[in-house]
Length: 627
Image (cartoon, rainbow, N blue to C red; front, side, top):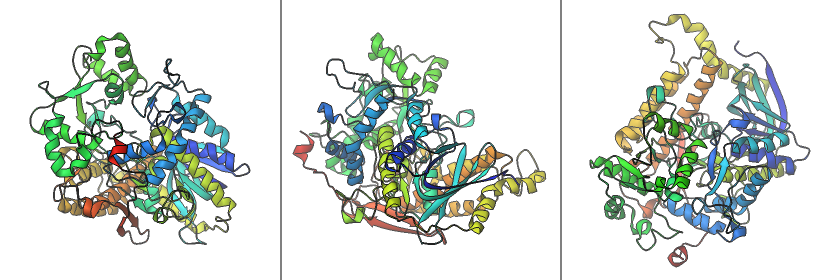
């Protein structure tokens, strides 16, 4: 068999995934669970895993309440308008009221945060962003988690959550494998905190061939945060809310520092301002509320990101592309020029290398922008993720059924990408959600809710067979190759990923169809995904690395299915610029000012879709918003 050893741990808290959400969970779990056994399982290495692995040049979520800058209510309003009204305000407020303390801890642990020497506060890049020297951001934060956990398993990919056989709908741990040794890991755990990653590479990327790994979000984020929960029967929310980014062409370098700190702006190929040309049509499409000229430039009411994307997409389609970022004026200032390059060298080295390799000097020419392929990840500026219980002090009854950040599966908690309805959390907010989830998990155990959990050896053995089946399938059929890597009895992970990306791109609104889809395309796409699921039973892996890739594509497939189900269910175009429903091109607040919730039955594979009420807990008075 492919595995060498069965490694079994009986523990109190399993933290699945060690990005910022997972590290926050491990750190806080030790504080509230002094005598509890805490294990972290990470498929990479905790020191350089997650979305901030390479580094960051800014912490994008900081209130600055002690400096009198912002309060949590401000952040809820900001995220709400950017998401076209669709957020879980209870969860957002809860994160925002605690996030500053997390950032202050980062600084205490050694993270260099730039200061505004005149004000004494942190140096701002924008209203919500503070600038850092973040090349070692992740190792610094990871150190706190490593000191808190009883053990950190690096290179262990979690493939399945274990479900309790003594009580229905209660989690009982997880299983996975070591991607280096092949050991089969069984975690029998009273609680699980899912801090796994969202999903890049669901849709065909703009960069193909040798450049296929050059995408915006972390390429190793394979939708595990979603697939693990969906397969366990957890309810999901807002999975239709994918995000499309305006980024520097081909290198996907971020534009935030250029817009906010360098005061750069965009123009079309002929040097014209173009955004305002598309706003009249957008007002007809989404309503005046989101483009009110009296509010669009107020600090509380920026034009939503998706609508800015809409202007870029339509300007290029009108034949006036490419879109350029105007950098030449800013880069004449040596200090700003240095900041512009450091912004990439601190977190997106590939963009700096690409510009150097293609003789692009932003001091002498304005570089190109483009819109990316869609991504599905809930911690950045997207609302997708699990349907989670909120804090008891502020959540309405429909949003609160137990412990804070616990999903609809008992004992299963989430942080970061895993939690739905909390956009604009970013790194600091994900860490904060991990802390919240860990405190709740400890309380859940202390209240005796996890007593009597049972998992049979038959279940563990069955899952072991499923985990390693791709390697066994390869072993049996490897001599049946007819040409190159063509085999009538299996597909390899790369072939399956190409198939999935093409399917999602063409049927669910990717770049090659200008983000357009409709009910007919989505229905065909779901049929094709079902056929692909059958074929995934015959995926083959020639070694442990391909076994990892096989499970990543399985998780991406399940995530894609949920995305497509949600996109079909919401019969409107809520986020033009992220995707368009060609059969329902207008925003429809009358019927769809609601959150979407799904559940996939683990036994039948059938989805149940429902609308959930959308409560605005923070005032929406225009005068207050524009103050």
